[in-house]
Length: 200
Image (cartoon, rainbow, N blue to C red):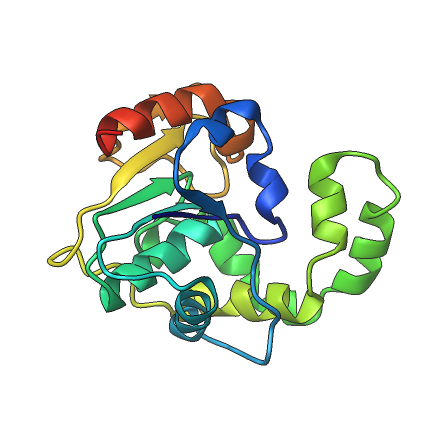
């Protein structure tokens, strides 16, 4: 089974492009309801339980979804872990975001969501329906995260050359001419490469 995790403030609609629907035996997940989890490990444990992820499964994640995927890989022996515009440790996240993340606790996220909900784009609609408590908690949790244990799992990485949230790392398996949302803007290229990488 393939489990696909969205980015922060997004849901399964992040993978609405027809190309993504060509992946067989795939579940496009939403974030579970936030019950006060404050660490990446706690969210990963919640996702494993709610989604029924098992040893031998494949996890694909964009942005926060990839970070949580890394933590899942520390708990389970996955067939493959695929990171799309994501990080395998906190050092890979933009330096500016590192400096700004303490402000997330003070940001008027509910007000921002209300404003975003009035904009018709799919991305802003997803953000407007996300749990504010989840967004606040994860903004902090990312910077307390220990990162991926690469002795257990080596990820396959797809990254955009113009990603300003998580600048392109030194070792990437597929580089695309795009930004942080390549799972949406470059769906065909991502899926084509994933099919080859996991031999399906």
